[in-house]
Image: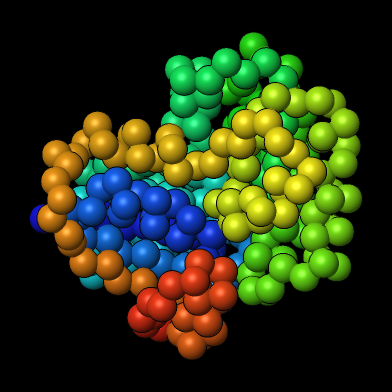
Amino acid sequence: MINIGVIDSGVGGLTVLFDVIKEIPNCNYFYIGDSKNCPYGEKDKTEIMNLSYNLVNYLVKEKNIDILIIACNSISSTSIEFLQSKFTNLKIIGTTKPTVDYIKNYLNSKKIGIIATKATIDSNAYQNGLKEYETYAKACPNFVKIVESGKITEEKEKIVFEDLKDILNHNIDTLILGCTHYPLLIPTIRKVYKNTIVTSSEAIIKSLSNLIDISKKHGDLKIYTTGNEKQFEDLILSMFKRKEKVEHIDIS
Ligand code: DGL
């Protein structure tokens, strides 16, 4: 069976991974949430490149992965070329380019809002990829912290509504959740926005299905964190309503 590594700064990438496994179960998946260094979206490009290099290096050396899914827009938008240049034999699927292609090929969008971390917005990856559309981009640094806190209270929902206000004032028809943590806020976002939402999952599933012969057979799933394994398990339980076993790993 094909071994697939999946990386993110925390639990966000699991929004992608659980969707991917539903459609493409017949691979072994190795997930790392780099909780020790979360959030990535506030860091500069060099730091994100170095941290993500360490994660991929671990997955290549220890787990013998054939394919890497970068289930993190902050890594994808800043470091995908660097990672590909370092791991030339690895097939790497990121988030930004597949999402841009997905919008162009499958949606009839005109006015697009892009919300993401500071690193992703500053990289201009989405804005440049979607030049022919009317786009409005905004960094929402509070959102990752809200998700990683494990509980979306009314207070926290108010922060989300406030941060979304100026984007939604533009009457957009499509909202890109350009951070893989944000799908966990969809029930909150849906209270103030009813049009199309695009996450990274759709595009990644399309890219991966071009590389794999899909069958119903189930592979293994292993979830690792560089932080506290119990906290990570609790976070998965509260945010995804799933009981998963998590192992702690040290990656320098
Ligand atoms: N989930 C990640 C992303 O898609 C990273 C969020 C963060 O650590 O700031 O950008």
